[in-house]
Amino acid sequence: MGYALSVAGTSLRVSGAVPAQLVVLDDVSRVPCGRVDSACQTLHWARGWLWVFAIFPVLYGVCDIVENILLARLMFRPTTVTDGSVALAQTVTRLKFTAVTIGVLQLIDLLVSWLLGTLVHELR
Image (tube, rainbow, N blue to C red):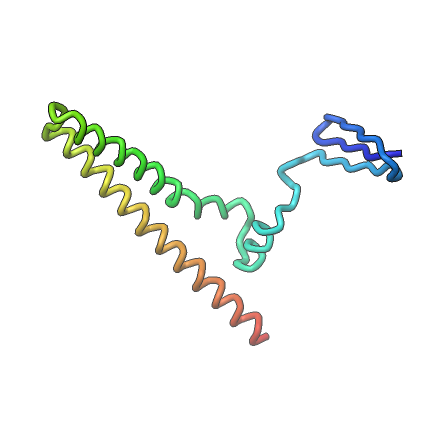
């Protein structure tokens, strides 16, 4: 009596009062993820392409942290303020603004795709 779980060749057995059940997951990448799968179905996209929409928000976060570190360094060490260090901070800031702009455009694209998909589905 109990549960038996097998994931990619690794087994785990838990005893208890419940009859034994076996779950086999040979390919963990094929395990459905509810929100991702439903988003892909709603937008009529392949699941493998949805990660593209995470690139620019992550890039924005990284650029924001790097910009904060550069600006803090410039403020706490006045001797490091040079034309090059200021140009580097400005470049990271421009990259951050570009990433957030593209991220917002992607969000608008997702909303329009969802609205058009919903409209087409309702008109059928």
